[in-house]
Amino acid sequence: MFAKLFLTMVSVSLLEIYVLIKVGGFLGAWPTVALVVLTAFIGSALVRSQGLQVLRQFQERIAHGESPGQELIEGFMLLVTGVLLVTPGFVTDFLGLLILQPSIRSMVAKYILANVKLNPTMSGGFSPSSSRSTFGDDVKNKRADGNIIEGEFERKDDNKDQ
Image 1 (tube, rainbow, N blue to C red):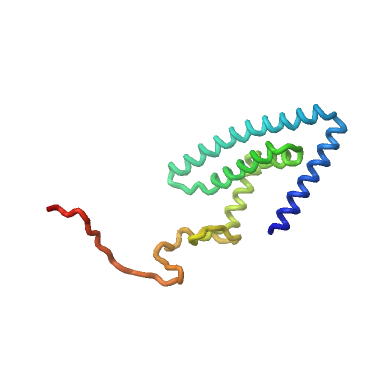
Image 2 (cartoon, one colour; image 1 turned 120 degrees about the horizontal axis):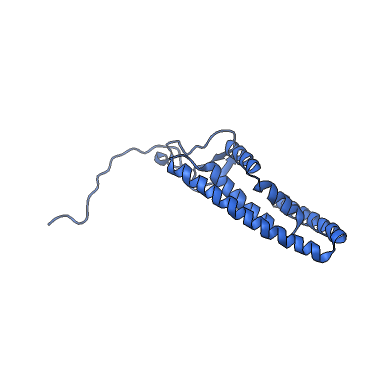
């Protein structure tokens, strides 16, 4: 996992440097720097407006008693988009602008929802699967070893009337 992440980061960095050198050779150094700063500024403004829209959709889903799973995923994607857009470079800006498109973001969020199964363990986590979330199961009554403990209880107040 670490090796894949490392290779991805190094590859993206090298690609960014290559594209910046090519664009800088064509436009010049200062126009290239100005363009990178301009894309970061415009991108952050767009991420803010899209984030507020997703927040409104999230609140509407909650108000109607529906699960806001897609909105949560889209919100996380917007967070990643913000990081991509303020990172200097044109490749990350392009990727950020792709994710910023509501239709693409919605399609990716639906794919993630359909292919990720939540694992309701104490440590939490996600596992790829084509099945739905298991949070609806009766997990709260199961012990770690799979046995179910049944019982009754009675509440006794410490401060009894005297």
